[in-house]
Image (tube, rainbow, N blue to C red; front, side, top):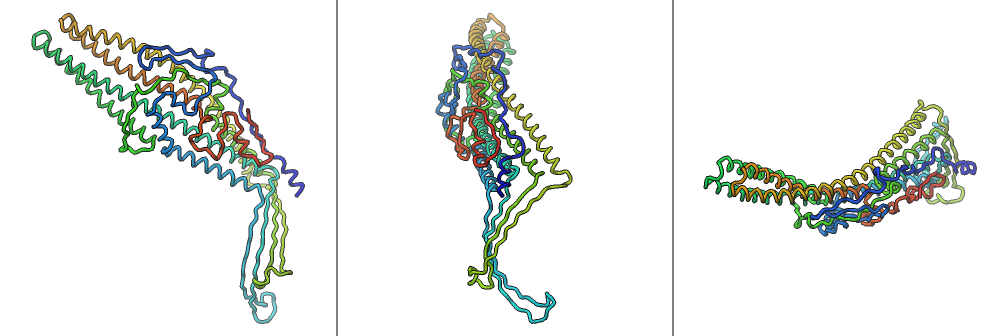
Length: 507
């Protein structure tokens, strides 16, 4: 036993090492992203990037909208996807503790009572059969020394799975909050587009009355009247699709906050109720892999695959077991604990796999291939994370430029339309010139609403791409694994008590 305990200080298989951060200095070719351009209209403020600034856990509160805060609070309480992710984490935690228990000896109490008729003829003798009773009470102890660390590697794998579920919960939380924000912004955008379309329909209807008056006095043709009527009808036809999109977006938002479609909200979010954050945090590239929940989850999968190699190697090595039993046996229950009825057994056994159709060898090779696959998936996840941040940065810069250009286009279109209306009343221009001015103005009105909404949505996308500040929040229960800041040794904490597991973490 002493020899087995000495040998059990090691664990076969590779010791997991956290992959280093990518050796990059930025997300874009320029080292520091330039501030976005500003414009005079609503939602046109310039945004600046504060490199290295920490991200708040409740990042959506930077939009300063109580309506948005209420939606997210309700989603965090009632969204079933988030609840399922929490339950999955608890399940993984309990499986980890169950696996840890296999490292300890097992103790069982056994009792039996037997009444049997015995015949001497079974032993070639004569005589009448006789009946006897046998009562037994024993305690059984069994222990499988983890000589080559197979069980400890299995504990390590379960710990990595628990950490994976923890970051799956963080990713679910981040996705949920980002989806609520973007759905609310999309709903507000559609309401703005519907309002703008109705204003355009009213303006075009008023213009139709002017054209009809011009026709009645002979200053316009019947074609002008029909064309303007067609224009009004065409604009009216764009309203139902927008209303359809609004209904669908409302259903999406209701599902996110855990409501059924018939449980409508009393208040509605508008773009005017949102404030565009002007100072945006931008994490250092070396911090991104620690902050992104999907990267941390992929890292945990890589750790699990590494531990599985040790489990497969240990399966090919000798397995030992120790058992002991102590108790008493008696013909009567009353004398079960009397002197002279004691029974005991000590046993040990060892098994060395010799030939299993090469299955154990191929299982080890399969575990190594699974590690290579997990390693490639981890690299792919890291690349996607950097791509997301780069996309969000470029989108914010171009969104601001787009909104500025759209404001200029709207001012020009509005001035042109006013001028065209006056000239048309005086008969100085043809109707087609007025029609083109109306169409340009209508397109500019809708484009402004869409451009404003896009700036808000892409701002939320940047917070999501940077990890959402999960390390600074306490509003979702992750009790099975304490919420550490990025870089903390979460897996090492999980396997505490399983000595000999080689786990390295980067501070």
